[in-house]
Length: 131
Image (cartoon, rainbow, N blue to C red; front, side, top):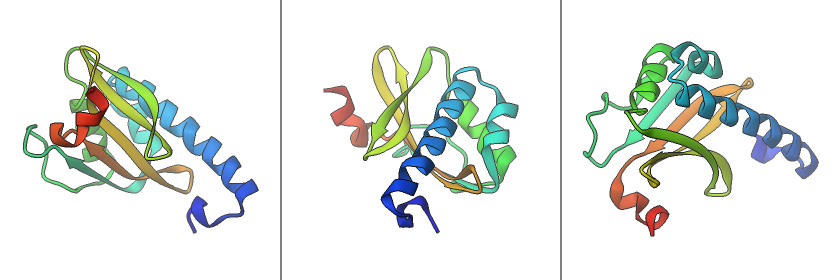
């Protein structure tokens, strides 16, 4: 059962916990802390990266903590920073380079860990972020 199936008063509590995990992921990515990222990931995590062919990313989807953490760290090239933001009405992370959004990250949770992580780095899909 996902948090979306809980009564409204329970969803607020669950969302707060999810937002704290997203905040931790943002800090761990900014620090390029592979181990901290791994601790936030569910053992069966899946990461999907939509680069639109614009990035040299690993084959998708990525399965498992080690591959997922490594790929998330690799997104943090020189000059990239993170910021939390509302993405499709949920707490997510923006990846910024020279004040331009170069990626957005959203996630699902299971057992208090990130179970599915979606990364969009496709410039065509990020146009509205950089108007």
